[in-house]
Length: 510
Image 1 (spheres, rainbow, N blue to C red):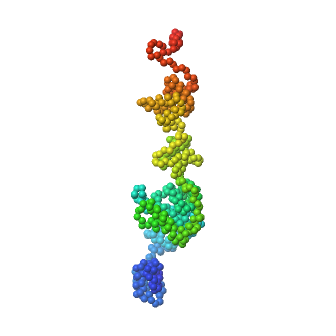
Image 2 (cartoon, helix red, strand yellow):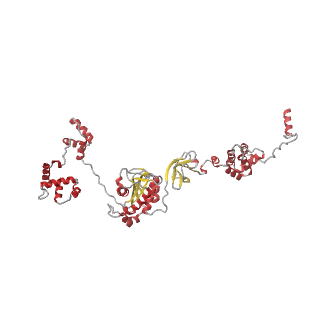
Image 3 (cartoon, rainbow, N blue to C red):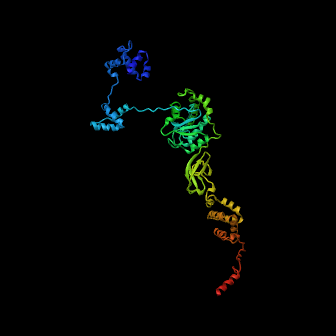
């Protein structure tokens, strides 16, 4: 009983403050016990037994002892024990007791008695320690609000923390999101802060890192796997609902940063607060005596773990985002609100986009890279490679008056003359007709088009239909006959040849 322990400590001269800590009662109770024990003469002389002190306390000060409550289902204890041995739950036991005894039975009373009969089992666990450089643990935690320098407004903020499991040296960074881009960039910053890479990274099943959570066959997110391959670390996702397996970053990382660095701070611009956080990680957090290792993390890191980390690669990881896409009928895929061309033969087929900081690759499901573009700098921008488009569609896309003139000049004087007639026509715009004439070179070839245009000019019919007929009939290679004579401007003469007139008369006579 606590009264006996309190009296014993009072007789030994222990202060009220220390008795509160040792016994677990409040100071007012200690004060009442001190006054009562002095009245009974228990602070001097021989100390009575516990039973005697309790009897005396009950008789002289009955309100001091805690009330002893008897469960309303205590009289059914044996029945409840029997039901429990048969595997019945508390709810079923309550129903059975009500059926047998004909009056209401408190479920809470049954539940409390069942708990006393079979206390909850506490699972033991083994603390796992690792070799230097073998492991780091990572996590995000809520960090309150900071001020976004871009808008001047407060925004919800998270803190990313990576803890080296052996030395307990940590890196922390404040961010505004938990996206894959943020996740990978924080990894890069942490590795650069440590000057090396651990053998594996232990994480929870957050979406930025894990595509499929599983206790037996977890699957990391594709971009995260690529990052791990670049830096040379293994990804070790925890089984679902098992945060205890990364307690070093849960308690010694996120909670430690929240309770020590972030606690009590007013909203501050995130960039300046991150600078202070980096300094705090390298000084205050690194130089504290850790509660488990009983050493300073910076000392363990500098003396042992730094040399055990894998070296950083020559170049940092070019953060890539993978996205499954489909090539639309216009020969473009959509990524991050911008458009990128791919070969028209793949229209309707599923593809992968791998977007880095500077380039965007389009990859087939068979891992064939079919396009590489510069990454667009603004939404709605189109990145186009003309060879990806159907040839018959290219002229209409890229042609202008200037490009038509350049193409015609490259083919010859006749083609240039025909095209120029259409480009200079007024008031109708005949640019499209000029484009169609130039497009004939795609099937006939530029040399044949030049000869066809020359023949059309020779006979005074330099229009699209005539040029197309000349090419279709193969007349572009035939020798040019003398053009028909022009009619005289004065006097009477036959416009047509006399032989033609005679032949017409003979035909009429028959």
